[in-house]
Image (cartoon, helix red, strand yellow):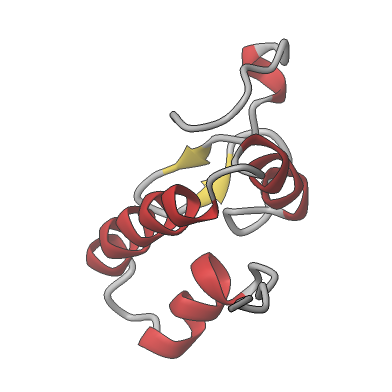
Amino acid sequence: MTGGAETAASPMDEHAPLTPGWTCGTCGAAWPCPDKRNRLLEEYQLDRAMLSVYLGACLAAAAQDLQASPGTSLHDRFIGWMPRQLRQG
């Protein structure tokens, strides 16, 4: 992942996805799990656009792997949880 601050987390605490099931390799929850979501928000706090690009790529890959899942639930799972920021201007 790029665009955010480096973390000192050990590989066992990464909360990385296990494909093709898209579960968390650390806690076993559906990926991105709550811990990973919090880490992604911290890591990409200065570049939410890149977080959207990263999660969009993950969504596209998961859609191929999890073909039986309805599209809306995958969208909610991968992108729908991100906080919305008000546009200023």
